[in-house]
Image (cartoon, rainbow, N blue to C red):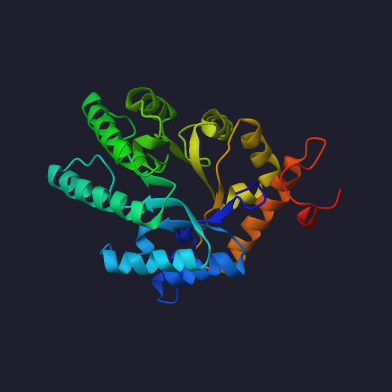
Length: 275
């Protein structure tokens, strides 16, 4: 997949339509392929109606029929740490189910959250989280997928915790789903941390605000070494088709010229922007 094709829309972007019963995973796949002209699917497990294999086989068939690649599979309610031991156990069972589903669907990356709700993680929490990520990464490696957290909520907003996880998990397929701006600290510190982890990010989610500011945000991430898929995520739960179209257009507009380094080496002449 070349850089002119390397864009995606996270299916959570349509959770508002999902909530009122007018969008399911099959509608999302059709939307990604034919409304936005994408060759990728960025799946949220909340868009799936079942984790049973017969249903997942139907989803897989729909993915393949449209010629899509599952660049990411985001798994909610599978976070590793929970202060309640029973919930931890249930989440682990769900995580293994999600990893199995990711394999069936051909996911290239899998996001499972850290789960620590406090701003600071204890050594007990970190040790437990590291152990589980190691186990999950080794399983995902069997089918060639990367796996790791998103800087999503709680202690995962602490860049030092993410750095610690990279050091201690120490699996070659461990990666970060970089959610732009989701860090503790001032705005300039958040930008610095986005760039700090860009080269180690396995995937990226760009919200509406960062896409609106794409001229400032995206070139810095590319310069910092981000090499994955550029995926937009809309959280607004209204006017979702149009908001997503705007976000995608911003990302494509800003990133397309950055493939030029004296000669167009990525895109065929038929899709080159005007120079």
